[in-house]
Structure formats: C-alpha cells, structure tokens
Length: 257
Image (cartoon, rainbow, N blue to C red):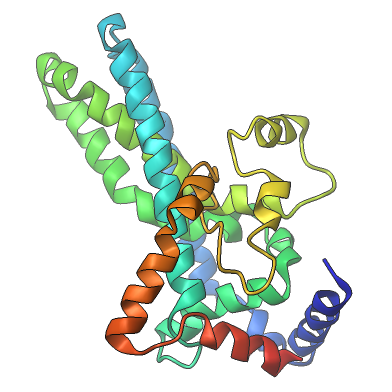
C-alpha cells in the first residue's frame, strides 16, 4: 500500500470510529449469516457423501472436466459481479447503493478491512446464494433412482464445484489481503494458483482499479485482459448510456481525501 492510499485508509478508519453505526451489523443480519453458513455447509457435507457413494470410474474424465468448468464459472461470476459493482452505479442509489455498491468503494480505500471480518461475516451472504441449488441437489439424491443419478452425475460434479467456489469466494478474497498468520495450506494453494494469490490480486488494487476483477482463482484475469473483455463491455455500455466507467469510484475516493 503506497503512502497516499495509506492516508486515505486511515482517514476512512477515523470516519468509522467517529460514526460507529456505519460498521454495525444488526442482530437480524448476523442471525441470517449464521443460519446461511450452517445450512450451506451442512448441505455441502450431505451432497459430498452422496457424490462419493455414487462415484463410478467411467465418469472420471467428465468429473474432472465438470470440476474445472465449475471453478472457471465461479471465477468468471466473481469477476462479472466485481466489475459491475466497481465500474457502475452509485453509493447514493436507494437501498442497492448502500447495501451492495458501498462495500466495494470502501474496499478500494481500505483493502485490509475485509481481514477484520470473522468467518461468519465474511461468508454469510455467499453461503445464502448457494443454499437453494445445494438443497435441490440433496433432494434429487434422495428421490432419483440410481440410473437417473448416474446420468446426471457429471453435471452435479460441475454444480458442486461451482457451489463450493462461489461460497468461498469472499474467504479466498480475504486471504488474498492477509499477509500474516495464514495457514500453510492456504499459502500453498495460493502459491500453486489454485486459489487467488496475494501478488496476483494486487494488480487490481492499482488505481483506477480497471483490471483483474476475478477474485475466486484469478485464472481468467489474464485471458480476459488480453481479450480486452471488460474494456469492450465498458465502451459498449458507455456508448449506449453515456455513463462513464468508475466515475463514482473516483468521486468516493476524492470525498474521503
């Protein structure tokens, strides 16, 4: 973090200290996060048991393909959501701006704030997203015949990998900003680029934050950058709407300064 960014982050922390309500999580929200985490990881364990019980060697290659495809889908989804929230919209939008866009603006000002969130706060919302598909998978394991499960097994390996990596995206993102005290196995996964590496993610945090949006594994960042994928979308949207990319993000940084 350079000196200017550090000053902005310190100013933001001072603002939160003067106005604690900004950083308070309601009891209802906390309850939702706990319930989501418990349900999500329970369903993950249940589905894993049934996936292992229904494994057939004939599916080996389709399983591997499904897992890789699921991880890539999760990585792209993380990039698309991240790009959308970083690039468009305003903090002043009713409901949506405060609940969804503001955390992305704050993250550019104080990137390490996410490391001060506990496991439940970090992962609660993403766990909520995957409960329904995981529950549907569990229901099908209980109701479908073995022959039917055999035919859809590779698809379920894809969906299971997708659900796991969507669920863990915020946790992986948090680890990419954590420079001390990480478990060795997490550092190993980062060094092998199985999950988002710390050095890799730093590229995104160079102002004006216009590249390397994928934050699950980061596998798609380089090819999407070489294709100019995000710039093409931005030019298209700007041409249609007249809105300038990241204008609100720049205003937010100036406001904190």
